[in-house]
Length: 208
Ligand code: ADP
Image 1 (cartoon, rainbow, N blue to C red):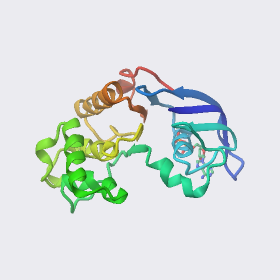
Image 2 (image 1 turned 180 degrees about the vertical axis):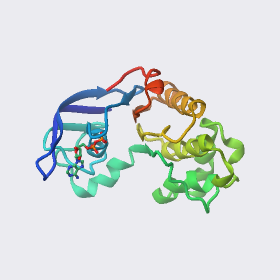
Image 3 (image 1 turned 90 degrees about the vertical axis):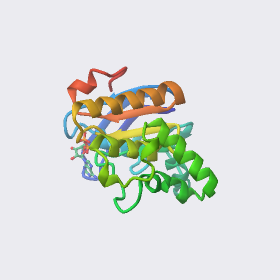
Image 4 (image 1 turned 180 degrees about the horizontal axis):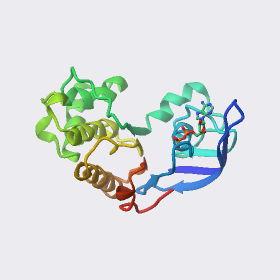
């Protein structure tokens, strides 16, 4: 699903953010990406999203090598990647349903399909009964779970999460990890999650 082969990223400043990085993340696999500030975690996520290109080496996302990816193909690539942010980035003037439906509206999905897929995604994260609620009325953990539903509603094969538990208490953080584990085991998703949290990192199957 995700493959890095001898990947080096040197920015224009001459700074080498990543040097000879090698790993593979298969379908259904869950790995934490950890390391101190400046270690290159964001750079690695940016290479997967083709926000930056590798200076050397090969990045392969869902079978596609990004070395010489055409600019017009980048939106197609990004549709295969769900992204969960630390601050969830929900729209507070829209309902939970509308927030989760957003990626489907962008893809031009027809309304009946939108309703079915949003309902499935909200069930997955245990918030089926909150579809009509506004995000402001939800707890931090619930808001993040809405963010996760939005990230998986289009059923991408890859999920990236950048410190998704950074603003949550331990229990809500553990719920998020268990949800990711469920998405890996039952939906075959590949999940790569950046975290600084040593307690959560101990729940890892795999650590990069
Ligand atoms: P992390 O996410 O682990 O904190 P980053 O990937 O943000 O690390 O950064 C890795 C290194 O690359 C840092 O030294 C940072 O200053 C540098 N860096 C990040 N982005 C750029 C950029 N656009 N231009 C130059 N240097 C950068």
